[in-house]
Length: 202
Image 1 (cartoon, one colour):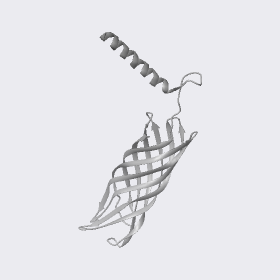
Image 2 (cartoon, one colour):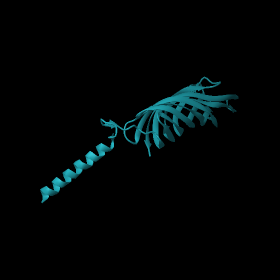
Image 3 (cartoon, rainbow, N blue to C red):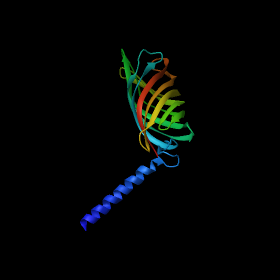
Image 4 (cartoon, one colour):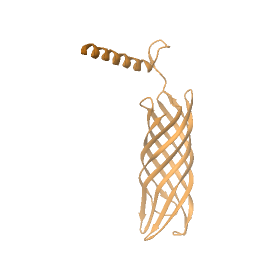
């Protein structure tokens, strides 16, 4: 009796595996072919990267590791994919020159994305609104401003499972100048970001 149960269970598992395998193939076009990878729908993920840049009207060049989350929605028409994405990043970017120190503890963006998909590979461009914080300090005195600007960049995303993808992305971010009482000047932060990310599509 035990052997019969084991045998029946093994046959059921084999049939289940065969069904799952068959679901990944299109039987309507002659030889078995893998179905096209779909990019449409909402997604959520995280990223880790590095940023470096310059502060206007100041010799500091803040740089450091950044990490954050992103989410968005894609529409797909044939090979063309477009949509929108929002992200929020926490940053260790800072630099000091003499007694002056500038840092940017966080930034984010609201961007459009458009690209071309070749099955599970998506190449895209992105641009939109950027916002963040720029902090200045000189000895024990500090001053903080939230500011906005723009961002643009390029990226490549690869689907490695039905709902999972990984991406490599470059962004240029321009946080506009704002008057700092501490420096008696207009200061802004222009920086580059290179980051790796993972997305899960629902």
